[in-house]
Every structure is written in structure tokens, then in C-alpha cells.
Length: 99
Image (cartoon, rainbow, N blue to C red):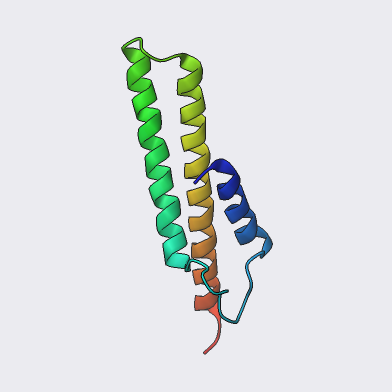
């Protein structure tokens, strides 16, 4: 997932951009699939950053490439953490509802 897609997903969670109640549009990924995609992309970006760091240590990569890769991985991780926090908050709110 590129940073722009992560930002849109984060904005949808924060601003209520996702439809509430009712079924998801046809062909739209489910929440679980969306989370799997985000986690997979975050893992991929983290591995790319690690590869860039290893290359910089061996003298094959520029520090600019390393910093860019690390920043991208950090932004992706922050997005995942923000979504996790929203899911936990929603769960806690549901648990406080009277039966």
C-alpha cells in the first residue's frame, strides 16, 4: 500500500468516510481483507527499509534512499497503529452499550 492509500484509509476511519449500517458495495474488500492488505504492505515496507539499511552499511546504497525507506515504513506502521487504536476504541464502546 502506498502512503496515499494509507492516508485515505486512515481518513476514512477517522472521519467516518466508510458507510455505516447496510452492506458494503459489491466488489469492495471486507474489513478483514483490508487489514490483511495493510499489514502485508507494512511488512513489505519494513523489509525494504531493512534491505536499504543493510546496503548502506555495506556501502552500496545512499543514505537518502535509506531515510526515504525508513520514513515510508514508519508512516505505514503509524497508520496500522492508528487503525488498531480505532478498532479497540470501537470495541470498548460496544462493550459499554447496555444489553
